[in-house]
Image (cartoon, rainbow, N blue to C red; front, side):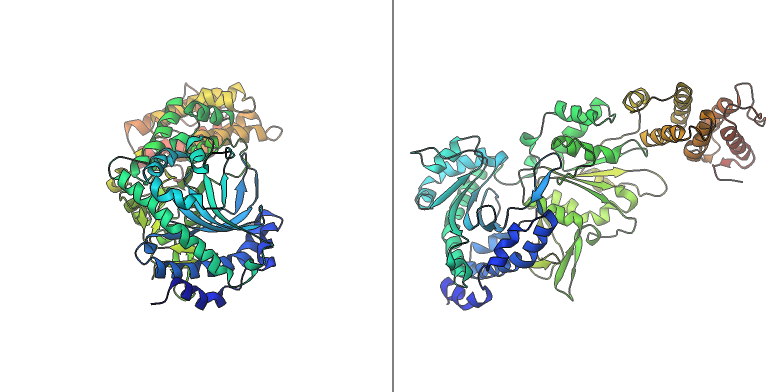
Amino acid sequence: MRTATDVVSMMAQYFPGFHRAALEALLTPGVAERWQAVQERLHPLLAALAEQLDRAGRQRFPREWPLYEISWKTARYRHRGRGQREPIGEYHFALDRVPRGTGIYVGVSGDDRAVLVGFTSTTGVRKREMQRVWESARPLWQPILQALPEVRFARTENSNGELWVEHYLRTRQARYLWAGYRYDWSDPRIATPEFAQIVIEDVLRLLPFNEAIMEAAELLDSAAELAVRERRAHYTLAGHLPPIETIIERIRARGFVYPDALLRSFHVALQTKPLVILPGISGTGKTRLTRLYADAVYDIASPAADNPHYLLVAVQPDWHNARDLLGYYNALTDRFHPTAFLRFLMRAAADPSSPYYVCLDEMNLARPEYYLAPILSALETAEHQIDLGLPGASALTVDGETLRNPFTLPLNVHLIGTVNVDESTFALSDKLLDRANVIELNSIDLEAFRRSYPEPIEEVVWQELREVATIMSAAGQPFGYRTLTEIVRYVARARGVLPTRAALDLQIKQKILPKLRGEDSPRLRRALEQLYRRFAGATFAPDQPPPCDAPLPESAAKVHHMLTRLEQEGFTDFYGL
């Protein structure tokens, strides 16, 4: 049997070394330009190195190596808060396995002008549990770690005279650590094919150490509920979220009106279940709430700013299976074509300590049980795995990234679906409802809307809208904030073109009356009669045509026609002749 060294020597010709142009791709100005340069010049070299590492690992550790996954950096820029971003400073692939708390990193750093090969330890929410793991496995890891030449922390420096791992475990500010081997760009070895053997030996030297930590984690995890292993009970990262009071304050600062109780319910639901459904009438701010909440979590105050932790997916009526949501494998090109949704999941998987939010807008335009089937199954299994339909265990994407199959659904992703219930949508099945919290948005706060609207609203306009809103709600056809906003904006824009009341009359006819339709019933008839008296004048009976000087003649004439049709046909709508 060939040794790992034999395999590396045999394959050295496939890795020519890191030439200068490839390394300097990480110095290219511009966010998009740097990512493109990295994918074209640096990624192929690292991919060749990863392939050789995979083969050598299977030779050296045939039992342990299949447990590991190779994942690539997917973040295309560095997020600096409040919508600010800058080009990536490094590019890497990592090896890890469940329970995810530690891993091995191989990457190129433009910030340090170095190639880095090392061990990384968990961040933030799982650090306390990992500390117990480290303590239980001290005899295994201490000799290996003491031999590593370089150590790095985040937000803290090592203390003099103290073993660096002790400092890491003791210090709260140390969010993560990296320990391993550094090779400067000026080192002539990195430009040679033989550098692959150096990197591979470094990784294989670190693997037993990582295995020791993982074995200790599994032993502890079998005795207690630890966040080291990714479980449904620890789906969210509540410790990384601002207090709900801060979230509410940030949402209101953006000028949007939601009841305090609704925001609190939404906040708790997101921490309890990975799937939340928001049904309700159109225009109540369901989709907007998903973005506002994600912005509030990351303190993004500007609506024009980008939020890399949020994705809006517009569900299409022709979605029939999971490939519409996740993407598909092309057997002719041997490449996987991922969707923006799958790319977002890959980015979330590479950043497990941060919450990510996906809005499936109008999720019931297609049958959610069809296109969400593998997601729903993954949510209910301990492994959280999604079968992507690949012919093998991995495939390259059209972006040049390595995609493993099955793909593990990241536990830091929250799925939020907005739902409208009308003739154009599908009803939600019990299979979906059993896996979600359902929070209804069916009411609007008119006074709160008026207070938050950036411009004054004329009293005559507001009084009319308030009365019409009351009648429409009683008819079971309330309208939302979107309709209110568009009516008020239309009336304001009509100044100098139309009288205020004439503009309001047209908007009520164009925006509100089309919602009224149906067979003859006391509820529908009562609403039409109340609206007619409002528009034509309180003294006019529904069977009388509206006068020429009616307060709102256009709307009055349309309602009179709808009432006449209701009387004659037993059915009415806005469009009948």
